[in-house]
Length: 460
Image: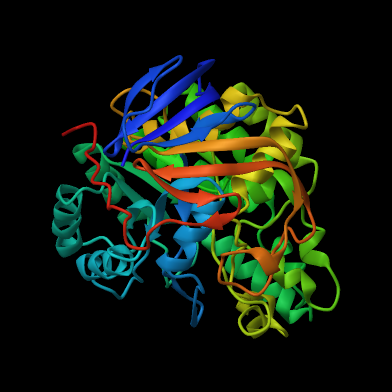
């Protein structure tokens, strides 16, 4: 069935105008004023509302074995949460452990999503070990439609690679035209600081930050870009949290290193005092890198505004507070890391970014959709509104007023890190490839309709 969106104010990363959008099949077929609906078309009146391209979250964890437990979402729950929040495409981190076979890991992660997701999806392939067998498998995985790797410079012994593996992963990525996304923290510094803090009896959630302060992240960024500079590989720093790390990335970029920067909605809105809440409440806010001093927030907002920071993601990673975070009750190093925010990202970015005057509408669309699509080989199929693009559209009501509540969320976790926060504006209608999937905070789409998005590196 066709869908005609009428009278909306279309906003892309570079344009803003009022027009109608006709979606036929799965794509946008016409954009013009005063379009007439084909017979049987659903007509959506978007007068007084914005129409954005579907938003893309470049960094989520849905299926994730981690620290002796599993993240709580499935693709059924996470894709519904994404769509209600205006996100129509997910890129998940496929993260087999060092001991696991890479190709088996890829097929396992794929099996969790195919036939289960309501929105479109792809993966960053985790490289947690590099040897001859893994190299052959990575080449095959790229042929299967994956154009990005993920490496960890943290989590020694679990996901982290050593320097030789880092070097060879980047060399392979350069050869194949693959971009390497990287978690940048110095694992040795973390391990030693954790030992010292625990030995001193400092075990509460607030100590998580003290075990990995900004210098630890900045050193991780410096480490990555040094290797990237020598290999010529294109890199993408995930979840950058602080001024010190951003300074390292900017300095590398000025030297000619190809490096992009992602920050998270959490780092733009929450700070380290959240993780210091009494009675173990702070465990809800433990993630890596940790929430930082509030003074870093304007640095990151300004970085988005000025193009120094390219994207805003979530690193969505849902662990229940009562049954999973509690594992670290007497030892902060055992708290499963992660703050779920897939459902809230777009509304928070609009409310506390656009409405607060920190970024404009074009930057909003660019950092949460268009630039993600460009970076990860999805543009112009995704990330923009133009004829021939997938009909992933968000009709956004700027006049909506509400509050965030765990009671109303689709995310499968027992708390919300933004409980009670006010939001100004939310998606009114969300389409995925021409079909309505969400209306006014309710999922109305089809579980299993989401497609795996095959991507080709620039080299191919």
